[in-house]
Length: 206
Image (cartoon, rainbow, N blue to C red; front, side, top):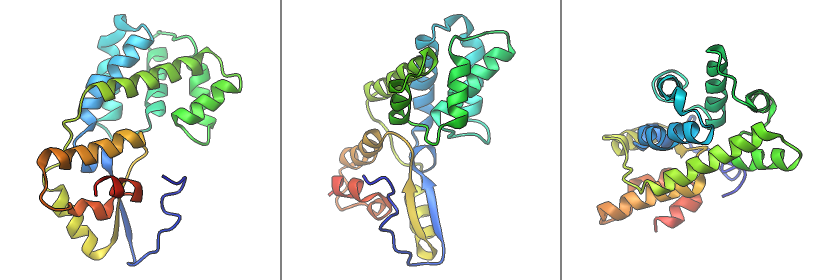
């Protein structure tokens, strides 16, 4: 997938509507945060003693507030700040928070570059956590499916607008979520969702 998936986009209508895949089109967010993001944060950072404090905060920030769907590293930094406010000082938290504030991109590759450039234990631990999250999500198996009415809603929006399903999530996991759903349901024809997917994902669904 290209760096900018809209580089070759030619507008056909006055408006472009982008719908986030993870948690807006696909019903995937709750299980990922309950089974991967939060548990791995507690495990990797050795914060089992504070699980009762961390878990509701993590869910509030990432699922049940206006910051739902926030970048994983912003969510991690927010949790580190919350812990500091409760007197829990996590080694390397300040370095992580500073990187989150200044980095032009917040992703595993960007974090890997920062670590390779001399990043300290705070960035190294954040990368360990993020990789553990990806592994945990992969180990969960895939029972993802679109929210009820999603297909019809996208089709209705598409009548009046250019419509795209977008995501900043791991591209391999994203493609797997969409393709496996149609494989499980054994759709008799190419799903209407294909028109809303990045080209690489559309090819995978042929």
